[in-house]
Image (cartoon, rainbow, N blue to C red):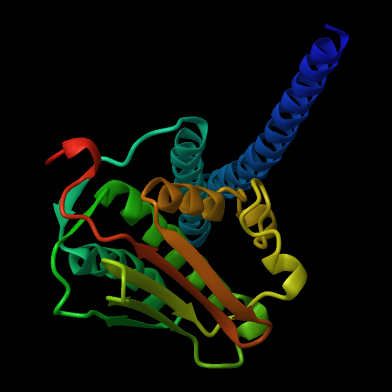
Length: 250
């Protein structure tokens, strides 16, 4: 009985520690976003007072950017907080990749980043959760673009590649490749941990963890290679399926 009580206390202590870490990380992310909104509101107010269009545009850009971060963090937290089976549908994997490229293109053009889309046109339709895989591709592509527009890498022509292919033994492989700042070995060990971010106040540290969670739910595999100053390559694969698990059809 004593051993059982000690085990329960240990599990409870671990649970409380995990809750504390989550709350602390979440509070830090919210504080950063609130700071961005406060700064944007201040610039907007100055623009209104002075009838200054430049201030108005700058302030609105700051507010809009932080509203986007709130939306992104909310979606990540919803994904993090619940276990869910993928909502499988028979999908064109290239269409998903092209949708992400179309979403990313305006920002890539704004920062003079070349965005390449290399699609394997022979790929058949694949059973996957389109919303989940869309989220994975968006997280990885956003990170790749952010790595390229980092001021430390501004001296070279930045490129992001979004690629689809079919590896042996798998239904599909997505690749997201950039020639941005890359990561050292110490950073690479931590990227799938919750609330760890290389973006400082601009990141929540949830994106890659959620990406891995979604791919794990698909029974897929994710890997990456990165080198400081040269860039990063993320690859994730999805298994072959003749039908979704448990006959869950679209």
